[in-house]
Each structure stands twice: as structure tokens, then as C-alpha cells.
Length: 217
Image (tube, rainbow, N blue to C red; front, side, top):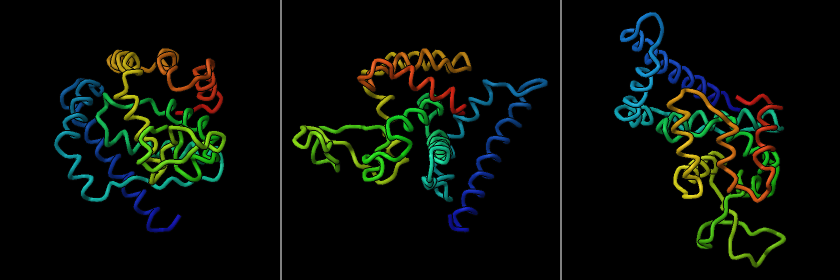
């Protein structure tokens, strides 16, 4: 990675850390002896509503997706998710571990044809063949294609969009809301509600095992 890119990543990381510390510090002002979780959440939401556009304007940009093996693929995916979480309302976020595991399994850790040639980490399809796409080699006359993206991070963004809008994941969104209110994730319950993503009946088990084996964040 070029020195200028490393400096930019460092600057943005420090900027993000400064903002979060400011939120936590403010929560002390309204709390007692420890940060008030609800206050932090309200401050974060307020920040997104009022100041996100300004922060984006001074250089918060999508991180480069650099990797050369499964471990660095995990790191690159994690950086992208951190960026997307920062630019996404907290109620619309998807647990980082689930995204990384799904991206890894679906794309063979970034080595699949659709990942390499189309930046598509999740096998996301399109039936609008005017959209930039790739056809499966084994089904060249398919009425659908696999979407092509400008970057792999764009693919992750689209995956999150689908989970937040498609009717097949309505129950997932309901359960996510419950877990956000409770303040902790239950991956087992969430994955049970993502069964529509794959025709493999063991898909949820595979993702959960991947999260555990790779100790994903």
C-alpha cells in the first residue's frame, strides 16, 4: 500500500476514534460512574443526522480492499464493514461477523470467479440484464446474471441493502431490532432467519461454524 494511503487510513482511524471518544465522554456528563449506553446511542444517532455529511466532505472514503489470503481477506472485509457501519444508521447494520463469514464462504475467501472478475462476494443475482453482470459458466443462457460491482466494498453495501429491504428478511429485521434493544447479538437466531440466502440447508451451520473457528469479531 502506498505511503499516502497508509497516512489516510491512519488519519481516518484517528478521526473516527476521536469522534467515538467524544461520544463516550459526553455520556459521562449525563451518566454517573460509567458511560450511559442509551446516551451514547442517542449521541451517535445525532451525529449521523447532523454531521455525517460534513465528515464525508473532509475525506472519509471507502477503504481499499487489499488481500492476498484468507486472513487478510477477513481484515479487508472488516475494514469495509467498519466504514459502512460508520456511514449507516445503527438500526440498519448487520453484525460484522456474519458479513465476514458469508463473504468468505460465498466467494471462497475472495478467490471465486465472480469475486475476482466482478467484485461480487455474495453471489448476488440480477434479473435486469441491462445491469452490468456476469453469466454462470454452467448456465450461459440463464435469464439472470451475477451482478458486477465497482469494488468489493460496494458488494457488501448491496448485501446489507438487500437484508434491509427484501421481504424474505422481514423476520431477520424484527429479530435484529429486538437484539439491538437487548444490547447483544444472538447469531444463532439471526442466522436461522437468513435461510433464504442459500439453498443449502446447512448454510446457517456453516456460517456459524466459520465465525467460531476463525474467531471473527
